[in-house]
Image (cartoon, rainbow, N blue to C red; front, side, top):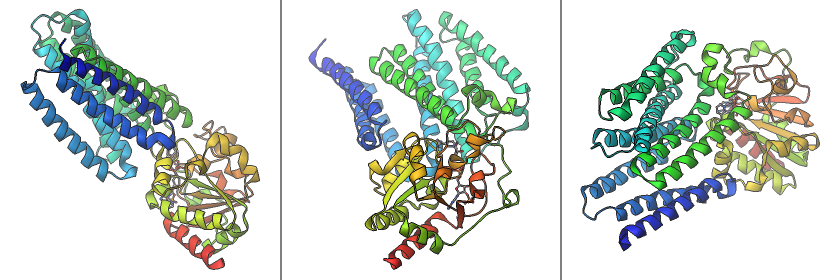
Amino acid sequence: MSAIPFLGYLIDLLAVLLLALGLKGLSKVRSARSANGLAALAMGLAVAGLLLQLQPGALAWLAIVLGTLVGGGLGWLMARRVAMTEMPETVALFNGCGGMASLLVALAVALFDDGSADMVELVSVVISVFVGAITFSGSIVAMGKLQGWLGTPGWTQSQVRHAINIAIALAALVGALAVPGNPSGSALWLLVVASTLLGIGVTLPIGGADMPVVISLLNSYSGVAAAAAGFVVGSQLLIVAGAMVGAAGLILTQVMCTAMNRSLVSVLFGGALGGSAHVGGGGDEAGYSHIVSCSAEECAMALETAERVVFVPGYGLAVAQAQHALRELSKLLEAKGAEVSYAIHPVAGRMPGHMNVLLAEADVPYEQLVEMETINPEFPRTDVVIVLGANDVVNPDAKNDPSSPLFGMPVLEVDQARQVFVVKRSMGAGYAGIKNALFELPQTAMVFGDAKAVLQQLCAEVRSAA
Ligand code: NAP
């Protein structure tokens, strides 16, 4: 092998190492930002390595450079514009693109096969087409549902959908078995169409509450499809990167299922089995009997004497974009000598790590972000807890009421604190659509209002008392 393609292989190896380091770094808040940069650099190096391995001047050069510029430019633009609350839809779209890329690579190899493809390549083509097409169509449906463009048709909630999906899966199996014998024949198209329909058929019935789990699973599928495409084109880089994404997506899916107290089976088949956590109703004013509400001024008075304060951020904090006002209040309390921390529930908000990202935006020090397992034993010695736009993740019924849809989900045990203030706009329910027993406890007071407006009032009160 001449020197330049060899250099390309070395760069590929470096890209794999950087990608692995990047994925590892994403597991810690402190290193997540630089880890993301490392992973992006790895992708850039992967493209450079590929260019070096090709004949200079080949038409493929132009296609790769143009594809990288257009794709990279579009990705950059989308990432800059997307609101944090729309991240799950964006991830779904990116997964879909990954699935489509693997599908197209495998299709190209199958359609232009000159009879030289061996059995490993042909089986990889089948896997890449099958998983790539499911990932593509499933991700597009997931994005459409999250955006509110697609609903859940009634028939998908009956047993009929299982019969339809099984029939489609059988058609895909027929196509898959026939492709190795005649890679560019009609069986290939049967496999493409059936797999695409299967992606739609499996994702369409799933309720919105479970969609982020499905997106994480589809992310894992996109890794599997990429790894299979790696076998198709003989790219070790793609095989390793795809396997890492596949494994990481699967681990995240498991973590989310555990944190939401859902099994993967009930997420995937829950629509028809009636097991969705998104039950709706039960959380309006009519459902509560003794609620105490107070003004921001009263809440500020409690804060002024508190030695230990814990903030619990939730989805509503992200909606209100109140993270900067929250940081401001923390600084004021710290200046008065209070010990301040933030309790982070693994599924607070609408995507994994949502609260970490939100608070990092406001420069909250990482060491003040405390995970659920660590902060729960601390609540009994906490003077004041302020729940900001969080609801399900602080619902004590998850521990105490076996009939609650949330029962078994680990929650932040804020009910153990001496005083709890819940900042939200109304008695409206959270994501699970159910009543929250915390709101009726004697140590709880509701502070009604938009999280940002209330936090700004609290800042003003605490400042004026100084
Ligand atoms: P939540 O249970 O969805 O509750 C959010 C609360 O925020 C609502 O009760 C709402 O009450 C309040 N709110 C909305 N806008 C507000 C504003 N501008 N100011 C103040 N409050 C506002 O949120 P959570 O406690 O963070 O729980 C997350 C839920 O999402 C869990 O059920 C979790 O399983 C689910 N989930 C999470 C993920 C993930 O990966 N993080 C993925 C999928 C699902 P008002 O309308 O009365 O203001």
